[in-house]
Length: 319
Image (cartoon, rainbow, N blue to C red; front, side):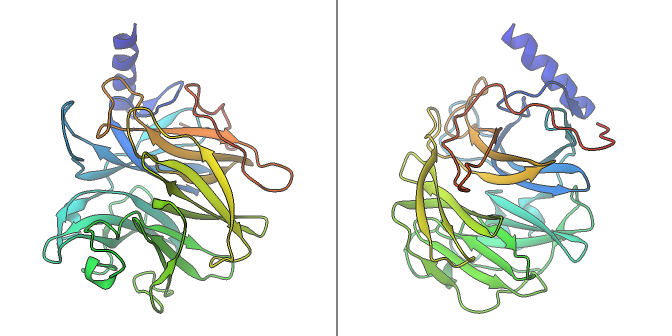
């Protein structure tokens, strides 16, 4: 029965639509590091693609994929909007990304390995459509490993998260071991001022900033294996109040990478585990949970489920 279910899902994806979505999503692909953009009555979910063999010992990731939905149940495979090698200065490695819409364009911030500067770097690509194609907006990286000296590891400049505040100021957060952030200029392709460091106990990676009813929520992965925790504050720079753990660590992979979003009046978090058949440390799978904020605005502990979110269609939703 399991083989039949996976095969049926694969056929539907090949046709561009997956019916009756359940967690994890997007079989037969292995996907990781979700980023979500809500635009025009659709949610666009960007993922890296894990291509490691079953016995693989490292991440094999060459491209980002995008899937879209207008009801949180039926997903359309929109294909590959950008690949790591679309950044001509990169060796490859399509690690975690994030996306935002501004000035009528779509800005995609991505982790890749630099070809000449040792270590990982952050690039930015741009498109007129959320489904791409995206092109390198700078022709050079926005952040390189030699710009940050807080650690001597090659992967401390990963997991970019972009946020545009109500006043129009854009911010970029990123890091491994050390959480870093900076303002972005209106061009979205330049840092506006120095790189700042935010001391966070037990921080590992995956910073993500979102805002709700005047409160800023800074979530991230902590400890190893990772669990999801968050803090709240009155501004993009804090001061921050720790609020605790909101999602447990995974059983089959040490990583877990979250993205919060609102869609049609409901609240969701995307993340990854490794629960598809054949999944593992380097063969992960994106999933989504619906949740409700408490009356005081805090986020409850969110349990991973196999059911996934219920239908929540936009007006005039067409798959």
